[in-house]
Each structure stands twice: as structure tokens, then as C-alpha cells.
Length: 394
Image 1 (spheres, rainbow, N blue to C red):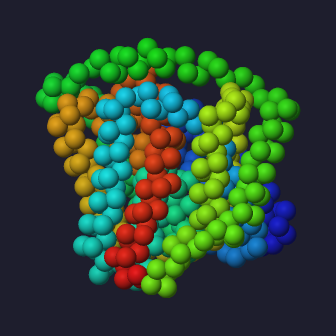
Image 2: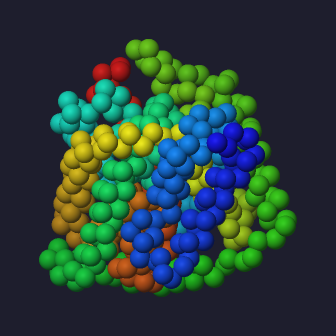
Image 3: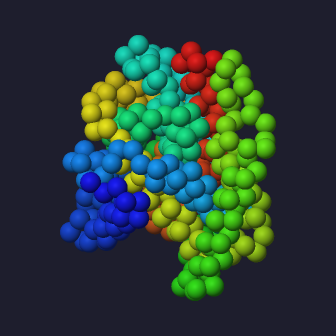
């Protein structure tokens, strides 16, 4: 068993490197389209722990959870082009918000109906899932940390996220063949998508190879922001309602780095994205996910059937609200699909779905996915507290 901290970290990093290398092979392209790297980053370390290669508990995991998440979120928020997101227009942003409302409402209804079939602390797992479905993996880890969900609880939640979340992504991709018929049925206008296509065709053209200076500035800023937030967080108020702490030290730390990163995104520092600052943030996030997977018990996945049923109802409510909004506001199916995936899959999946519907509009999916991250940090907190209340903790 690997117990030396450096050896354990090296193993997890090498495992992650292997996953991403395999995902580039043409022969495995179909496998990684169905099960993307984020899933392997969680389950392979779980299998390693089950096999006795890595420990289920280690001080390294705690340190990675404490520091890698704020580091990743700071870099993701620092590189946000918020004005470009706002320029997407009311229809795109409206469908993103409707999708978020559908996730929050679906969480309440599905938990209320399936509570008797779920474990007593299932609200914690569903709260973490709400984080994933309002913005993506980063929000899942944030909410898991906020509500104190155990690594074992994440086992069935990742199963639901994979089967239901990525299953819905497959349905959305299949529905792309019907977008013309759907748009005619709701009387949708395609002027908005044509305008966005013209604006965003050259979005990726500004990227450049990373230099040593870039790497030093990106890493230094991220580490300094993380250390500053962690130092300031204990001094902030931690309100307690009916014995439950609403804003813990770790929650304050995340809110500080997210808000600070967003503020700095309006400065020239956002130009670090041209060198790939957000990619370093995603690497930190995926490395953190390997540590969470290594702590999970494979037996917890056996709790998945009841969670799966709750997840299917949950996503169905989300879809129903989006379709209702599309009919009411005459929104193209493109905005239904990207608005949904910007919530359920985040910035990793939304560009894929957007590109299937309109290849030139993949950047719109990216912007909406990043918008989902921003919205999810705050909306998922509210959803988690709602589930805490429904779970009888308050």
C-alpha cells in the first residue's frame, strides 16, 4: 500500500495523466465520449483503494481538498469573460437560469418523494449532486465540502451523475437531428444563433503557448489567492441556525476566492487565459477528484438504485421547465440543449453539445458553461440549504 505522501500524490497524478493520454487515442474515442475523463478520474482511484493499493484515509487527501479546490476555482473565475457571457443575450441567459431553477425545483420534489427509500444522510449526497448539476464538477466538490458529505456518499452520487447526467447528454445529442422540426413547432427565430456565430468564430484564435513567465504568474496568483482566502476566512462570521453552521470556514474561503477571481477578471489579469490559466485550474480540480475517489467505498455504489430513480425524476423536472420556457419564449432547441448542459455538465460538456447543434457555436456552450459555474456557486448553496431543511437537520 502506498502511504508515503509524495508517492501517493505521484500515483494519483500519474493515474490522471494516463487517463488523459488514453483519451487522445483514436481507438478509444468512442469510450471517452460515453465515459469522459472526469468519470475515470473518480472511479480508478476508488478501484485502487478497493484493491488495497492506496489507503482510504490519509492526511494528503485532506490537504488536497483544503487547497486544490480554492486554487482551481480562483483560476477558473479569473479567466471568465463576463462581458462576453452577458452579450449572449436574454434568450441564452434566460434558458440557463430556467435550467438552474429546474434543477433546484427537481431537487426538492425528488427528495421529498424518495426520502423514505434513501439513507438518512442522503440529503448531503443530493446536495453535492445539485452542485454538479448547477455548474459541474467544481461545484459538486464545493457543496460536498460545504455540507460535509462523506466520500462514501459520493459513490452512488457519481453513479447517478454518470448514468442520468451523461445519459441525458446522449439524448440531447440525438435530438440534434430534430432541431429543425422543433424550431418550426415553437416558431423559433434563428437570427440569434447566426449573430452569435459571427461574433464567436475567432474566440480561440487569441491563445498562445505558455511561457515560463506565464506559468510563474498563474501559479503564484492562484497560490497567493488560496492562502489569503484561507487566512481571512476564520475571521468572518459563521451564523448558526438551529445548531447548523450555515457558512463554515471552508465555505467562506471558497466564496472569497470565487468573488475575488470574478473581480480580477475585469482587470488585465484575465489575459492569462490566452496562456491557458483555466487549464491549470481544471488540472487541479481533476487531481482533487482522484483524492476524493480514493476515499470512497465501492460498496456504497449498491445504494444507487433509489438514487437513480430520484435522479431520473429530478432531471425530468429540469427538462420539463426548459421545454415549457422554449415554447413560451420561442427559443430554438439549441438554447434548450446548451442551457441544460451548461447546468448539468458545466463547461466541460456544454461546448460538446453546442458544437453538435451548430459547429461554429461551440464557444457559446463554453461561455454558458462558465456562466453555469458562476451561477452554480451561489444557487447550489441555496439548494443545499433547502435539502438540509427537508432532511430535518434544521
